[in-house]
Image (cartoon, rainbow, N blue to C red; front, side):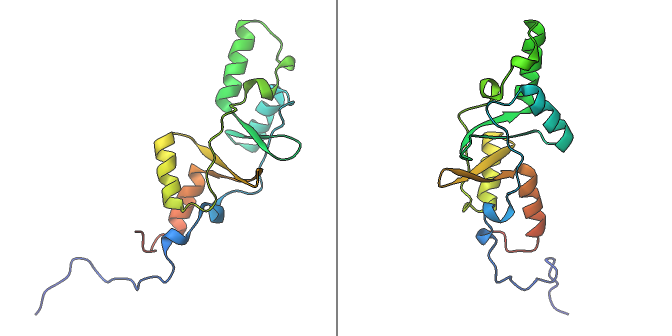
Length: 154
């Protein structure tokens, strides 16, 4: 009879290393961005229309200068009601997070997943030569994991 293996049939090892899959292979390049001089009300409408939770803020040279999120919008609404101030005067540059943590497009997706877990951030912008080139989200990492299923995950 012989010994039965409980591992089942092994797939042939893939010639492509999972570690070769970089953030830049899965990041979103077609981004909805915001300008510092935009009104917060316009940001809220854009977030709702496009079903996104936030986005990068760039200057006229497409350089990343901040991130604006639903939470920033909620804070703006709350404070405008509390202080009874019209929202028309509220600009992105006054609400955005300015110290933005970015991620390297050459990082492998599994290291990026760990970075998401450690930071509790939902999205990381990717900057090359000072310019915003993309963004990676937690959902992008999940999509990458499904695509890489069956690869040799070391």
